[in-house]
Structures are given as structure tokens and as C-alpha cells.
Amino acid sequence: MDLGLKGKIAIVTGGSAGIGRGIVERLVQEGAIVTIVDINIAEAEKTATEIGGDTQAIKMDITNKNEVESVVDKVIEKFGRIDILVNNAALSWPRLFIEMTEKEWDHMCAVNLKGVYLISRPVLSNMVKQRYGKIISISSIAGKEGIAKFSHYSATKFAVIGLTQALAHEYAEYGVNINVVCPGVVRTPLWEDQLPGMAEEQGKSTEQVFQEFCEPIPFKRPQTPEDIGSMVSFLASDLAKNITGQSINVTGGWHMH
Image (cartoon, rainbow, N blue to C red):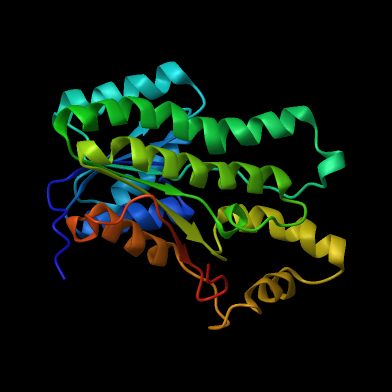
């Protein structure tokens, strides 16, 4: 099915690896022109080269207002507009709440929540002028149900859903659709970084720990970055023109609300 994304101008934050890469790949398959923005420019450029198509990579710190606004300006200057913004950049690591430092809390909020604020504002200004646009933010099932040792992560991901709902109300009159995708268990570099510590703490292998996370899933399998990319591409298309303010699970049935 042709989603009608050929020639659409897209920005994907944190698009160099994991879910972000899956999103970029799917958008490019549909003919979109994608700018990958990532603090790891070497990885972003490598991803852009490997995926091919109409892709470019720009270094950007999602927590730096000046860098964010500069990137948005560059994309508009080069392509004339921005049709799609995917807020994917995020951090995650386990920590008991009372052991969490203020610095850790602030860093999580800066990337996962303030970053969405910083880039969505200038992009929305452009979309309001053109009276068209699609913004899709990546939250998590942890944004719908709190998870032990991830209070900081859950707080930011709940907030992204609330922000999305408010913006969907504010900007529907300008033809902008604003939605959230909530992945379940996706084995990304974030997972690979966390699994060894969790396995050591529980006295299990990393594979055992990961499989236990998959056990509640009706399909008994994790989701893939491509699964998330497919949902994002659909929401970025005009097939989803009457969908806004929604937080859509891609979890294999793990959560059904």
C-alpha cells in the first residue's frame, strides 16, 4: 500500500540506531526525504549512508535550544518546509527512586521531555504557517503504567503523552496531526546497555532476563524497530488524517489500553 509519503520532508531525532533507525528506514522506503539528527554524528552519518535514499545526517544535542533551532532552520532553508517530525531521542536506565541523584533526574527530563518541547516549538511554527504537518512522539508502555526502577523514565514518558494530547487540541485547526507511539519490548542498544547489570543483580543470564520481559506478551516475542517504523509511517501519512491526540501501543498485545 502506498502511504503517499514520497517527497515528504521528515526529521527523526535520535535516528542513528535502534527504534530511530527502524523509523528512518521505513520512512525512506516510503519515499520520504529524511534528516537524521543525533548527538552521535558518526553513527548518524553511517546510518544515512547504509540506508541510502534521500537521507542526511546533522549533529544536534536535543537539550541545546540554539542547536535545535539551527537544525530546524537548516532543514527549512534546504527543503522549504517540514512535513513530519518524529520525536524519538531518549534515554533510559534503571535506578531506585531514593538512590537517584538530582543530576540523573534532570538529565532524563532534559532529553526525554524538554527535548520534545525544544524541537516541537519551531517545527510547529512552520507547520502552522503551511497549515499541514504530522508530529509523532515515541513514548513507551512505561508512559502508561509505571515500572519499578524506572520512575524517572516513566515520568517523562507519561508527560510526553499529556503534552501530545494538549497540542493535538491546540493545533488541529491548523491541519496538524499529533500522536504518540508506545513501544513495548524492543531490543535496542538501550536494552543491551541495561541487560548486563540487571542480569548480574538477578543472578541470571542476559537472555533469561530479556525472555522474562517477553513472557507477558501474548505473542511471546519482542517488537522490532521496523514494527515501530511501520506505525510511525502510517501516522505520518494522510491515511491517518482523522487520528490525533492518540497514544497507540505496539506491544504484541502486552498492554491493551
